[in-house]
Image (tube, rainbow, N blue to C red; front, top):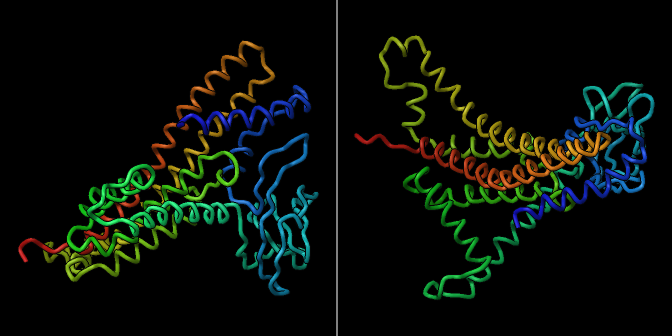
Length: 356
């Protein structure tokens, strides 16, 4: 089962890309950077593939508030190709910029100048996140239904329900409880939600076609919000010892008079959630970029000699299968690390000195 995703991805790419490249001629060049960035960046439409030179696209809702009020469109209202000025033209002076500071964003042209509207569109990342949440709810509610219909004395569940129970007990007993310590129970809902949300989004991101393929946790806005939630919970969970250790630590008076240690501790309040944000974002984004780059090797050598093409294609397939297998492990590890560090930060904020 672990190789199905990679085989589907390779089949899909070979079926679509090779005929297109043959039609374009031997001198056509594959823009690897464009392909990688298109895969990991957010967009207002869901590009599935190209067949016969015609793009297959799932159009998404565009919701913006500009100088003329609220506007709701379908992304199909915008041109697929950019004009000479680098704009994909749309209605009511709204365009999608393809270059510059607002590349990939909807802007409103006011007197020839770009102005960013208030944008709450359902982008590819948002749509993938909604789908992941629905999958997550089903994964939790179905086992919950089983437990409502059985007693605690009944035989332990098997199959999917047993798998979910195993994951929940692992996270609670081996991650949350040791990290938070006494009173860990009230933090279980948040930390379990973090683990399963990140894990589900990561797994959905490995699927090479809709409803998967979105780079949710590889989007820094998503990881920023998750880290912000942990930051808020940590600060509100902090006891008097937590704040005392930051602003009046047990160090010589000379260091308190020259507040170097308190300054360092205060900065540490923000570096911890920052590390959470960057760690998850960078690992997932890098994994997606490496995986798609390895697959693109096949198309880079498609116009070379047959021996070179077959040899490099074999290397690409082997490395791609290895990376995809590794990515499944990374999906779990990154969800576990984020949850574990969040639990540790909460536990440190609630720590009571032993002598008291």
